Length: 152
Image (cartoon, rainbow, N blue to C red; front, side, top):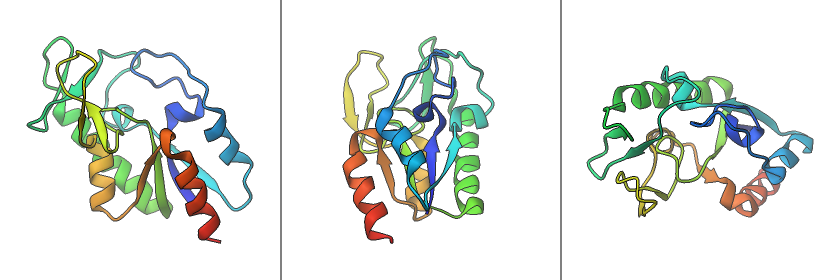
């Protein structure tokens, strides 16, 4: 089973702040037989640098960084490239970073930079779902593990 995975969840230094966070449960997937992880960072694929100014998706669907610059086109480009990578690689599911304006699934920051969450998806998560690829976040690892077991 091939799984598209947010590169930051695998410890790659691609987060907006360039920092690395550890996600032991995600790294545990690397030891599973018959599981191949395909790392992706839609924001980097869209041409954004590391580090970069934090960004959030508004209720209208656009993405602005904290300085007020509209970075929607970079996020859209990255989302399309992430979908293409998933499809070309034969990924059947995606494991993405929660709350991200690219990868968040089910809940993202509201675009006000106040720390408030709203129901919704990041651009890459939204496009992956439209392409028929189920999306999980690191907060849903138990559900993903069930999916892996059931697919055998």
